[in-house]
Image 1 (cartoon, each protein chain N blue to C red):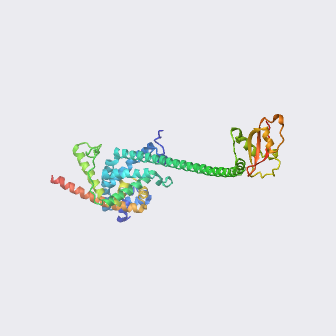
Image 2: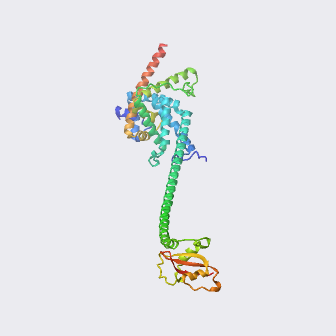
Image 3: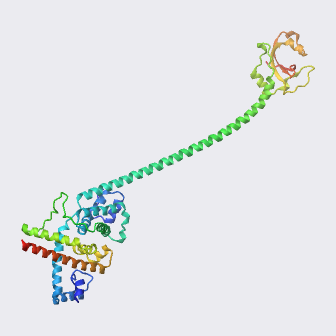
Length: 200
Length: 233
């Protein structure tokens, strides 16, 4: 029996709980990218992000009753589980150095910038992105979460507050402090970059 | 709006849905009059652009295919294990139920057997008691089966019949004999010549004196005949 793509999450989850593999796969494909992006942006580590995504869906597979449809969307529930896993990961490895992202075959992340007109510009942009990623990774976990949710995931303050489980004011405050730290870090990195290019 | 307030809510006034129109206008007005806050906002816009570039960089990021593969494998294992476990539980319960049924049936049969046996035993005891009583009577009848040849051999079936029938009244008391105690008497069937009846004190037809006849003699515990009966030929 095939399942319609537009089938609701809770319906799919009920089917998956009864052993319907296709339903579970559909749920995974629907939500995995968002979970992976969030985990990757928070941890800066592809392996950690992969583990977190796997953990999130294992939780859903093993105990689907944990999700209560009356309390919100499945996506929000999965975000909550992913957030807990990310926080645990960050607590466990507070000083983990983010590695350069690699593809499955061990090559670089293979980012293709659509507006990269020349290799020099492309390289400069790659360097800037690396710096931004490093700056985000250096933010304390709570500020980083606010920046990732509001700036990178482009959620509203209200949605971010709901996912983080705190009031809007707290999210606004964390975001403000996170931004301040991020701007300072980026200014510093820009200065270093400028000095390096002058020296060359 | 003051600088501190602008730093907190003014930098992202356009996106913050919780702010009112008046607050947005105040933030805009403050940025146009305060060069420090205007520089801060420019810096934030530049940082925002770089964050967006970073966001775009990871916008298409997806979990590797191996994660899906591992999850599906785990899903299959989990549900197959669950099915196997359920089948095992069902089988175990079925076997247990069957064992209980067999046990119960065996017990019922055993109980029935025991009660039948007891009933049979009681019946046998009763019939044995009856037989014993009858045999005691029969034994008394058979106690002295003294034979003087094939002609005098007692016919056991007939003697049993005699005893069973209890036909004591058919006997004719021999002259001089006293009434007998049936418990101690025995019946003997013998063949003799009719003339021998004379020796017992009975009248004999002289014309048929040489005839061989079959006679039942009732012998007392002293071994002497006390009565005679001529069975119907």
